[in-house]
Length: 588
Image (tube, rainbow, N blue to C red; front, side):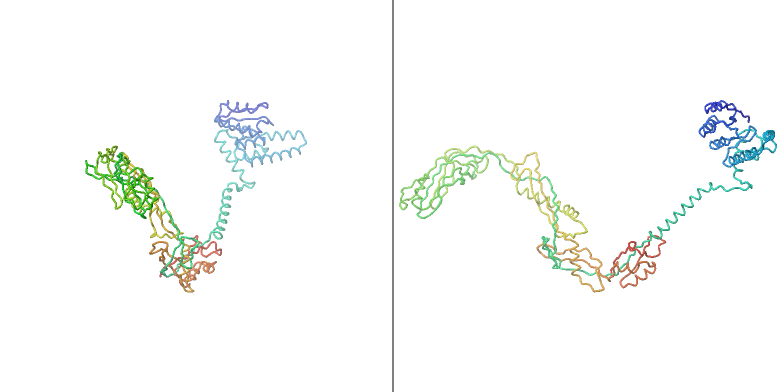
């Protein structure tokens, strides 16, 4: 492959060099800088040359013997040739060191030459190829190849051979390159550290065991009569008086109901009647004579034949005390008597021509004509006659539906019954807890506030449905489970070598109310006295097999299961914090 040689001028800067490189027509471009040139002693400039060559797809070769320029070329990976006939290679650290050593030797030899002619002769010999005047640095390159063509293959092979030669020592033996083993050395050190850390964790921190000891126990039925109190201060565990708490759930339900009341809400008839009242006073006899306000007067409706009643709107009564003074009081009230002397009076009388009356109820039936027949009010000592000289009017009929108290009571009971199951479930869910005992037989439901729209006795609109709102009160009594278990353990008698392992779920039987006693029942499991503390003291630091044999030998222990934290753990740690003891019970 042909090459193009570009001789650089001392005044050329990096821009000129790049321009000449880009304008070159050949693939391989040899750049020959002037002696002691500084433009290619810059690492930045050398990298710009390498980049420009790559972008224009050319091979740049620096022709120089200057070690400083060669060093910059090595950093930019640009091949260097001593002369235009030398094989270009990418400089290496070893080749640069050899070149520097060669320069030092040449300098020493030149220092010993005093004769100018001898110096010229030496210079000529150095410039003459093929003779024994080659420098050490040239020998490094020329041993690989002599004069070759600057092509791509030559560049590649020369670089490889120079690199391989640099890796050999002076005696030709290959020198180990530790750089290539750096990754494996780092990985080996890291693996060793990981193994050390894992070993410390695995044998110091990780070991732990869980020991499950099953105790053979006996179930004992417990049954005692207990009493209750709603006053917390009155609770007495020793005497079996337990405090009960009333828990409530108070939802409100609104539903439609049927109103069945029927009433005539028309106008009431009114009129006037004539009253004729008389009585015979008796000495010493206290009585009330006449008609008081609101007195009932009954007549017969000639049209329908029904008896109809009216009430007196004014008071026409007077109290007689059976004395002469009482006779005087009668006269002042409008009564007339035959004599003021009590012993000579045969009777007293009074007439009222127009006493106002009102029908007791609305309806047209209370409209009557004049001269109707009235029922007289006769007594042993008093006679009252009633008549009407004018007709009664104003009575109208308007039948309406009303809300009755019976309607509300029926709706209330229906709502409570329909929601009782739901209310109980919600209440039980509300009070459910591991800390309390629920006395389910104490469940009760009752109605709280009851409201209706419209209210009782009110008229119901034809196009509306009456509604009732009932506040239901669901209640149940609960006991403090801890207090109940305290009472059970105090009442339960066990042998000296036995202990209580568990108390079943206590429950109350035959509960009626908190003022009556009931029966507390449960099942208590008892077994040999073995505690977590005694087991810990026996197993610390022992082998797992030894611990199993030791614990199984304890009277009352039915089985032992030891679970280590990891498969390599074969003994129980000395640290009690890493030992978990679980005592379980089994029925005989």
